[in-house]
Image 1 (cartoon, one colour):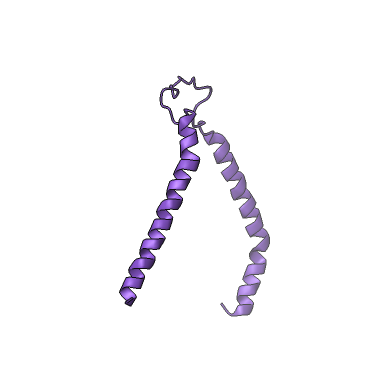
Image 2: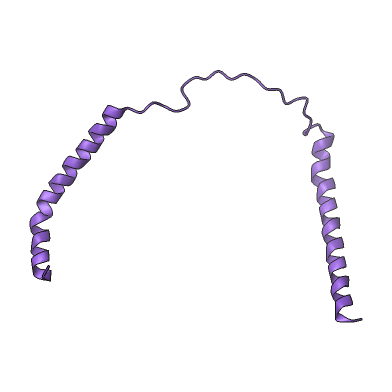
Length: 95
């Protein structure tokens, strides 16, 4: 057999095996579910849902601004305590 015939034979055997394995999976997994009515559409009725709370809670802008102001004060305090150290390091590094 020529190399092309061997390749074609191997491809055919692999494709046949894959098709057989796929058929076995289909019969073994999907068929029992379909036979028991698991895939039936008639049981899938839509029901109305009453919304208990808003889907997206409104933002408390005042609380967010207060948090940001607190963070700014904290950063300013930290910057004030490290300014002399930074300036000293810059002087030592020659900048």
